Length: 304
Ligand code: GLN
Image 1 (cartoon, rainbow, N blue to C red):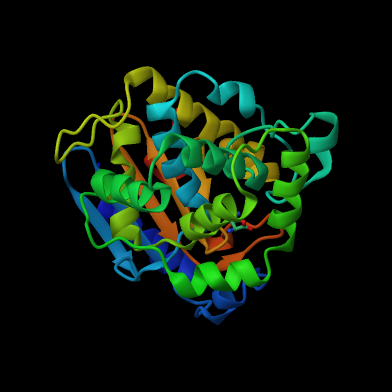
Image 2: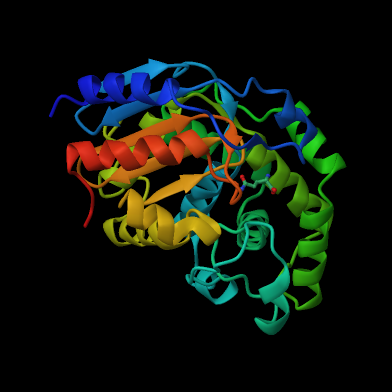
């Protein structure tokens, strides 16, 4: 399969089309990004990499980082994890509060904000120095010691993070947050602030395409069952109230972020990362969704 040729053709096709949607502005720092950035990188488990456009430029990966946090918490888990966060699609926006009251403070899944905040609370309990150890883990799976938090993005989100502050307080009222609210929020906002390029992202998530083993270093990040389950949650919950649409159109497990990034996994084969900052009404990259739909259609490769 000549992935590079297909990527090049689709890039040219999409860049000529109208770029719809809006850049996320509720985090002031994200509103500064050039809306016409467009990068793509596909990395294979055989250590090949194909890219085009702004694939080397770092951007705020936002909720894509929730996959790293879940991977680390699951790796360390003592069994309580799935009692504190569910594995069902929410069918609601990423920052919704509505189901939490009837669900007694147990978020539907680890990828909506409520769930990722509970995962950060679990990490806060599991780790001695959560901020450093979480970053070390991400650097280890990425094979890249330069990956870092962005303090300007974290502070920017903190200054406007009213919904996440509401979510964590509400969850704590049900007893599902065990640590200090400010410590957990600090970890969550820093997690979301991480900046990476499409090239870095697509190689960092290869462990999810390779039964939990990072193919370059051969490090075992997760076991096969944990990997299968994280892919399953990405497939059913990775795009919030557009998860069905992503499965329908793209047919791969994936995860989006409001910075305009998307990663998708084709098990036993590749991880692809796409970045285009303009978002559709569900908070997912307009061009990213578009590209991946046509890409999996043209390659005829999906998990279905
Ligand atoms: N940091 C963002 C938030 O909490 C993450 C949202 C996202 O990328 N969908 O609102």
